[in-house]
Image (cartoon, rainbow, N blue to C red; front, side, top):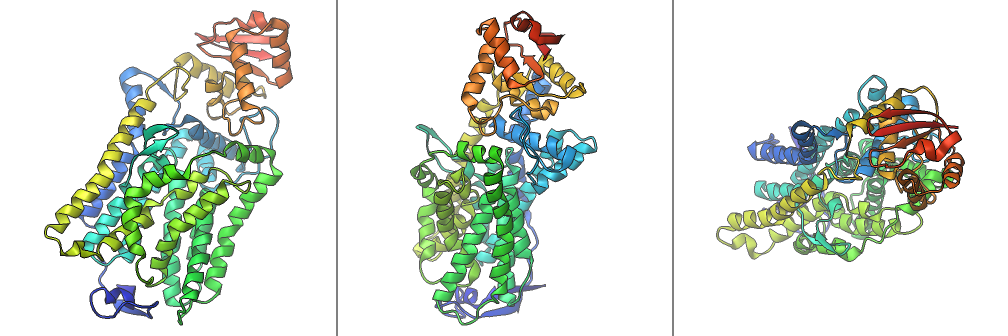
Length: 537
């Protein structure tokens, strides 16, 4: 089987001296199949990816808890995806179910649409979402494996970069507490954030296919299609690809490479990748829910927190910047961390949001640069260098992984006000609302409102402070006061009528008899043990 390699790579073993961008040749090289080491890495990545899911299922089997189908430590994000899937099952495009007033159905995301189709055929939404986990884990593993094989020449270099790219983790100070920054940890991304993990895989595959097309000297649509997929799934990775391609081509041009790729390749890749980004940009300006969610998702996640978290890998990665880049992929690998910083800064402005997502997948280029840089030092002359390298890789991966597993174990334990597990009576009430043909939304306490769109396929008054805007916090406070029975009867009735809700769902923590509190506002009431559903005018 033929494999294209740069002549500069051969310089590493003494055939050609390093220098400017070298001409490209094609040699016949036998492709190594996946070996036991790779299979062990894949198995480890797969096992870690189901850790939270296993903890949830253990609560169901051992303690009889009612699980709401979450697969991550942050419930609201999982329920947001499930709400989109519920909407996609009805009409492909999703609207915002976390407010009671009508919102346009204008959001399209391919994975959500496919899950919505499966839900329309009778599959449970949580299962339709979970099916993406093995896809994301497998795609990420093989994408990173291909990236390391194309970037590094020796077997042990590739193995070290593969393990670091998938499992590197370090500690930092997160909002004043000692911890691990989840977005920088691919395993964390596999806990419910499979769309982001898939986008990282698509970005990596786009760079690999672009490198191959550039070596072949002709236009190929594969990089553009992978880029568009990354942008639709998680726009930050689409933005990254655009910045990486443009910056790398500019760097190559400034370095004076004589053999350039056709202009159609970068043009098509950038334009096609930018189409989903323009779509998201338009959503933020024509759909009020998206505009409010963008503003609500801005956070002050300090860059020094990120720097501290990636520092143990970034420091040796700096050695990989010595000398000139040899080919597009090596130049792109060097530019990727800088591009991530650029996207992070842009996302912190009014143009975007959630800047931390710009660093999803950052361990991949840093791992390649670190291994490449260290191997160009005197480290290669040390005795027992493989043992030392193995110990270093273990120290850079195992402690943070163990800490993250331990932290997740504490976060998924059933607690009051956390709807990853609810009571059987609350589950029966939600099932009733899902079956009742009467149209209308639901007013309930915040934690239960989080699951109403996913479990009952209805809009909720409050449940997600990205999407229950404007005034999410006042909404939640008013709902809690109503359910706690601390509002005066006249105030409670006026509040309920002002929301336009059809149902009020009293959870098992509600001590008040809302039938008496709301009086003539209530049309009917149904009890489900400790939970109650009131239909109101």
